[in-house]
Length: 251
Image (cartoon, rainbow, N blue to C red):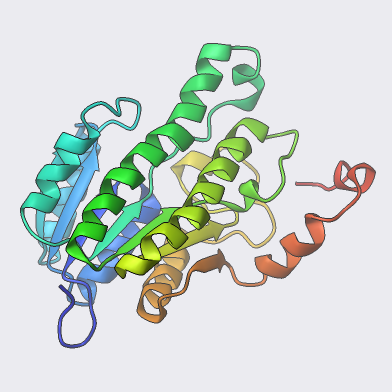
């Protein structure tokens, strides 16, 4: 449960090595979140992330979790909720893929789609059911501006995020009567390991900026968050551009 000041006491990060997820965890731990579950495939990076958060004063448990293997999701994530209420679930995993390669390799393309959409849907439904059962909590879903309109350069990634975005917006309505809050986050270009090989797009931000915006949105129970904020208006225009003009955009 949240403390007397409204700060969440427990956090589950799906995608425990995500730079946005970890930046959010660090920020929440700095503001009184004490129990953190980092879910991801076992790796030295996951262990290092857990050690860092422990150094900040949180009690951290590492949970073995694979988005591409939804069969065990109910069992693995159910064990987390069996330990007590979870105030915030942050669905932060995803892969960019290699567009040029993946569009000529159906198996690789399916792996990208399965990670970004079907694996995310499975995990979100499991966590959403648990949040509904406990009668409170927030489910934060990292979408992307790429969900707004597919581009030639990343339509495989964008199509997965578009599906996840639509799912999360609809699932918010299903969970609302139970007192569960769903926050859909649409960041623009975020400077992370995943995008290090790309030229930064306009309005590029650091993971910490996304984390700060998420913390504020959780406090306000915002349902849809653009990071940075002006992207809301940029994408409103981009969404309605005629295709010949859209093709000429430099991003």
